[in-house]
Every structure is written in C-alpha cells, then in structure tokens.
Image (cartoon, rainbow, N blue to C red; front, side, top):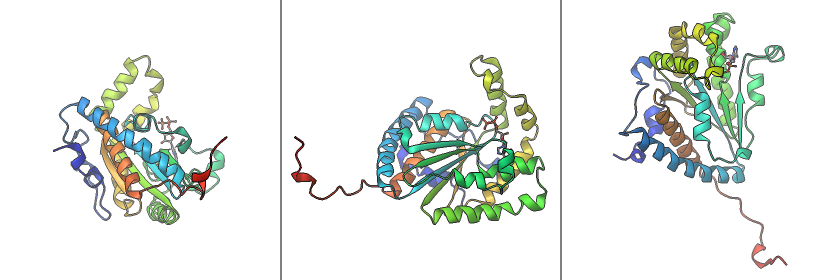
Length: 274
Ligand code: ADP
C-alpha cells in the first residue's frame, strides 16, 4: 500500500466521545514504510504541496489555522516545527511558545494570553505548548485546586468552539513518545555537547511524574477532542515518522479548505507596463 492511500487524519484522530487509553496507542509505529529514507522522501513531497497551499491560504485571507503542539519533554515539539514547516513562507507563519505564566498573565484568566496569540486570517499559528498546560502541568503540580482545573475542559471546548465559529481552523497534535525513548533522548542531550544546552535538571523531576502526566494527557485528549477541534495522537518515537504524519495531516487539512487566490481586479488584461 502506498503511504498516500492511508488516511492518517482518520487513523490518528481521537474520535469525539471516545475514551483514550494511551497504552493502546503505539508510539513506535511507522505505518506502511520500510525505512526512514522512504518516510523522509514522502515528507519532502508533502512539504512541496504544503508550501503551495500555504501561499494560497495566505492570499485567500478567509481563515486562520491554529496548530497546537503538546507532548512530554523531548517529544519533539521544536523538531516538528523545524522539519514540517521548512520552506514555508515565514511571513505567513507565527510560532508562539508558552512558558511559565508571567505575573501579568497570572493576573488574568488563563485563556487571556492564549486568545491574544490566536492567528489572524491568512496566518498559520503554531502553539509550542498551549492552554492545555492549564490542565496538564497545573493539574500534575496542584497549582490550582481540582475544582478549578476540572472545570477547564468544558471552558476549553467552549473557547475552541467560539474560535472555530469565527474562522479559526484548529488542529491539535499530541506527540506521543515512550518513557524508554525519552530516556534515550535525555541521555543524548547529556552526551552531545551541541545538545547539552537543551538539558534541564528539571526534566528529570518531570520524568518522575510520568504516570501522572500520562493520566492528565489521557483526560485532556478524551474530553477535548471535538468535531471542531480534533486531537491527533502522533506516534513520535521515530522522528521522521512523526514529521511525516504531522506534515500529511496539515497538508490534507489545508487542501480540504480549498484556499484560492482572490479574483484579480477587472481590466488587467488590457494593461501594458511602459
Ligand atoms: P520547553 O520545554 O517548552 O522547550 P521551557 O523549558 O522554558 O520550554 O519550559 C516551559 C515550561 O513552562 C514547561 O515546564 C511548562 O510546563 C511550563 N508552563 C507552560 N505553561 C504553563 C502554565 N500555564 N502554568 C505553569 N507552567 C506552565
């Protein structure tokens, strides 16, 4: 079977109303490919289509596309952005990384900083972490009481519905890695002088909370995958396959929107530039 005949959008989408058990999703899957080389070649083809679609999407100026990236440390949020978006016109893409909230952000409701970063029409906005941190790290570390974070799933669904009814198309990717693969990647960061800057001792503390994070992720994926803002669970133990799947879903989503260049002004045919 050729990779294009497999509808990855369907395969990795969390069906609204279904209950997610992450143990049942294999993070090491590589689909129909027999080698990384094949997968990288296929991604290259998608990137070409993505570039063309993004050019039209920008000119069309009818909708915005929001891409949410979440995953455990080392799952590859940065790498996905780097590899999938390579060659796309930077003028049409905006990446926002959400860190520990500032005092000003904390003085507002948790969606305040998120709403400000929602892309405008014509733009692709990429969230490296997102409002989901407010039901992930916040829940795992008890930063607010359970009665506060547990209300947020419905609030997030309402917020995303509002966005989708106002021309924001939403895609959410959970980059799913195994605990063993995370260990290998953390070790690689320690061993490689060019990667060491990425290593934080805090990552080890977070790793000890692996199970609590997996539970929090499972709940977010179960409760917030909707028809208007679906979650996709991306097998991410193999970086090349992760990039390929995200690239394909992004490209297919843009293609389905069928963006087109605006009609040119009338009477241009008779103009000659002297
Ligand atoms: P990254 O790991 O994304 O490359 P950092 O090392 O700066 O970047 O980590 C960002 C940190 O900010 C993460 O530990 C994340 O859990 C935290 N963070 C993001 N959003 C929130 C939030 N709403 N509340 C608390 N912590 C948050």
